[in-house]
Image (tube, rainbow, N blue to C red; front, side, top):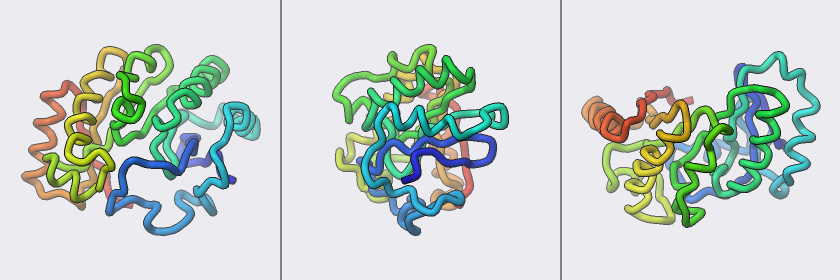
Length: 199
């Protein structure tokens, strides 16, 4: 099974296939594989030891970043994420990023942002919409409308502990007015907005 895979100059970690969203534009709707990997669907969730062992196959000098992002929401496995990230940070001295739906504190029923201090360098949160109603229609979160406010709050919570905190949106799914609204939401939360292209 694919525990890690390469995108550009980054090594991506596929911790889980579980997710609290069912986004209409999610790449996993298109098939089993992505980014050159045959399949990102896991037979089972990898252990801490399996994740760390998988990194032994790489020449880490060739890569610039480690990214927690697979076919599921990585903060669902927050303990495994942090345990592996701490070891990888100490061993390889590479920046570490989490790509997340921003529902980690909801999922874990506590504010997880302080746990990122000195371990995680970037948190990229999929904002996806300019308001809670649109987000619910597009992303179908198990938490309903409260998911949207929770992810914005999560962005705010991360700012004191993480160097780079971003909200991301997909250009092709929003109007220019909606993108402008997202820019204001990001500014108010004290985070940057990244506008990415649909792949």
